[in-house]
Image (cartoon, rainbow, N blue to C red; front, side, top):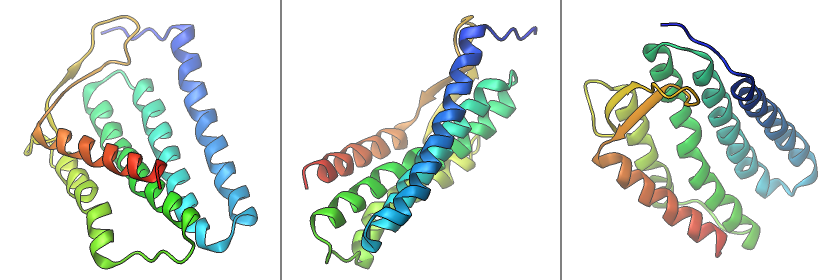
Length: 168
């Protein structure tokens, strides 16, 4: 198939890469300006966002499905690191003495960890993505994903910790 990259599509890829660079710069600047107890949570959050942006931009560049699937697998590292790191950052900001217990770490990172493992097992496991195909729309990024049952468990997990972080 012929893969034509339209100018607006190219701009969206550039914007994703610029956003990733900006995110990484914010992490670098934040390290020097924030109290030490917030630095790890901020860096984790910013790295998660940057990985998400870079993987999404890279996925849009490739025309073939196997490359898009590989980029999407790495994108999940970023996507599912955001909510736990956001929660930790907000909680530590509200209470600098807050400690991460083993149970809290398991609660925060257990479901995202299982999700990333299931994503890397695709197509053997279709718990996160039940079907993957190429988009035929001229303005689409080329990937069509149907979500499996575990995807929705992860979504609920993300929204719970995003909400709890925001209202800490």
